[in-house]
Image 1 (cartoon, one colour):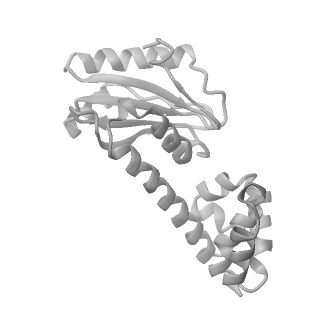
Image 2: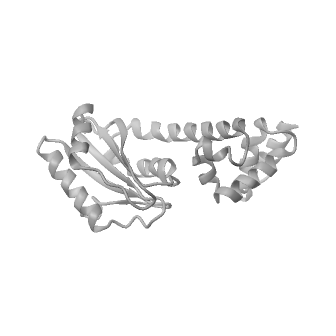
Length: 216
């Protein structure tokens, strides 16, 4: 019966007309009772507003609207999706892979409920060493000190840094504070010979690069 449902949705219907509720229903099918998957999918979409927001939600928030098994199943799906996208940015120099980096950042951060500052640490060949969340803020504010970015860069033995400011609720257009922080971090890293490749702001639907706008 499950295989028949998958076949009807994924094989018999053109993909461009398969809606979010059907996709989420498919995802919930293995962990829901007969006939429940569609109802649960609709309830989750109504609660969170979009498929992306459902997938990005924490297990705690998901369990407010569905059972724990379904919540962990959804969360694991999102983690797997992020890892697939992360593989693309790990396998090539990041400074030449902006489209792949942008896709990863949007999937990873666009539905966060609070602002964060994240740093990507790169080796001398501009491959990703690791990323770290340096600060978590409120729904509309977050701040970190340049010395914190420098300390983490030294800890990772990084040759370059890309700083990310997640701004899921607001317009990602850089503010004066964003530009000031980006320039401060750039100067602090430069004293140790570490390059600041970019300071990017992640909004709900787009990523803005301060480097491409010549603001750092």
